[in-house]
Length: 199
Image (cartoon, rainbow, N blue to C red; front, side, top):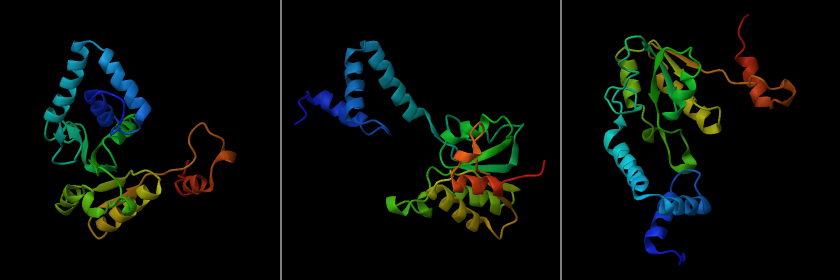
């Protein structure tokens, strides 16, 4: 027994389902909401309902959007033949911050993780493979994270795309800007050397 009234205990349990929210944080959020005005609590509830009702996945790239196809896929100034593959919709913001990429995206909504039961069938790749098959793509940039799962996903996707008339590239990874080389781990340093370019 939690010691809380049922509505409070239920809210805490629901808040604990959010990523990065443990019991203590969930309790703080729940008590904050309890102390909030009725208007603020209703506004939060309405925002969550509107989020679920008003957003969907783009039928072309799987990005979260309120219009289908999304703004990236329908942009007249983007190169629709250049596709950057990312793990989650949140990664698009990181690429956009570079202000140098003018292609479109494809969101996988995860990475391969056999330990968590995520295989190729759980990733959203069908529409990307269809676009490539139809000859709509010149280059696919694999921009998954340099983690074990991200690397496995990039390798699997590269193998799935090989043999088709598309250029497959992988983002370079390595020593972060502003850091000292002496503190770089061997994997980061090796990637930095592999990703070097002529100056």
